[in-house]
Image 1 (spheres, rainbow, N blue to C red):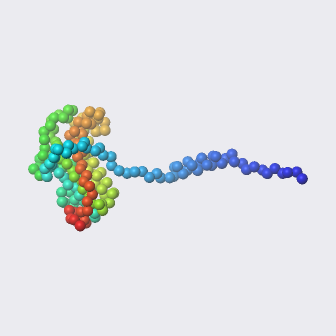
Image 2 (image 1 turned 30 degrees about the vertical axis):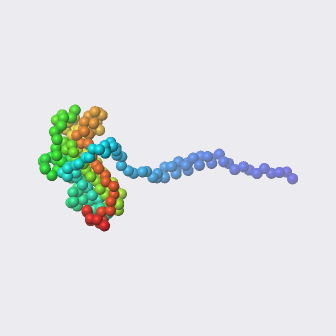
Image 3 (image 1 turned 180 degrees about the vertical axis):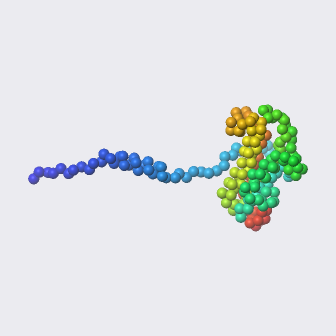
Length: 195
């Protein structure tokens, strides 16, 4: 009896199928992305130099464990934070209970009054939802961005993004981002309360 040859399987398209499956899974799979905040750390403070900030120069934004937001002790909604922060940073009416204005001369901008000593203190409870914390952060950063954008258009007639590096630095010098983040504490369910 003669040996019969077994027919071989056609594997020429196997590589093509594997490649198509690989592309399919790459396109349909969602990749986890890290979310966070990009921040530039301030320079180290000389321990011998004790810095005291007047109360009028500090805007306290507190997010408690019930995700309630208070600005200087008053309950507010997230959407109100940006406008409150802008008013605090600008102090347009030169109110005595808001940051002190200082006249300065800044290259490219000229003579301008700014609240040089202002600080926004962001504090949150250990039980604060991260999404709420991020929303508050975004509103505070948006306040600075809008102030910079307005000054760019007023001074140079164009958007902040369209300015060259020196011009952008001049605008940032007028409105430096001063957000101080305190270590989370256990504040309780009501603004300013303790457990």
